Image (cartoon, rainbow, N blue to C red; front, top):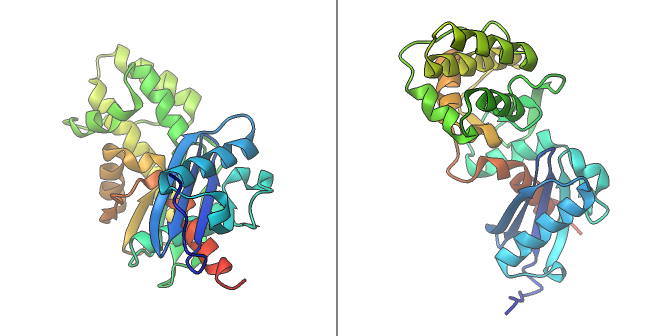
Length: 269
């Protein structure tokens, strides 16, 4: 049976349509009531609607229960169902602050881009740098590397942690890194050592982004790549900072931030 709620306690929704996945989070009475994560189809508007509907089903709510919707991600340009659209950088800031209020710096690694974000004590963005012109430092880059090693993407991180040494990777261009990896394997380098070198090459690229915006504790890791334990370890080694990886699914941080903003905006109307 569909749950109906008191009109004095409406729900608020965030929808994050990314390049690879569409996510939605429902906030009710100040807590997370439901969420969803699905592959993004060619129709970004439909992807957002489907993610929203699935999150509502988890929360046992209907669209009539939702007072305000905020859409974010690249697909926010095709979200007529939303009351407002907000950049993913702002939403990641709010989502990270909600989960870990002491967050001052965010590393967000998604499927197609990587962001370095600085926050104030209230979760407002004060500065950011973004790598969206190259696949290096993204989920797509790691996906290509996993294919080279003929392993699952989820296995890359654990393999990196097994490395006894780091085989330096001179290129972070996806095409050249793929060719370089094949050459390193051909000369007999151990796969786990190469994989650790790949993670460190990405971490050094991220470090370059932080040289522009600065880094301050606590450092929060969001996006799908935050599930990669090897990437987290490499970032901590290179940045020399302790990194918080949320127990809550890091891919949902943007959608959560959008839901938090929806509550803020919706409470005023």
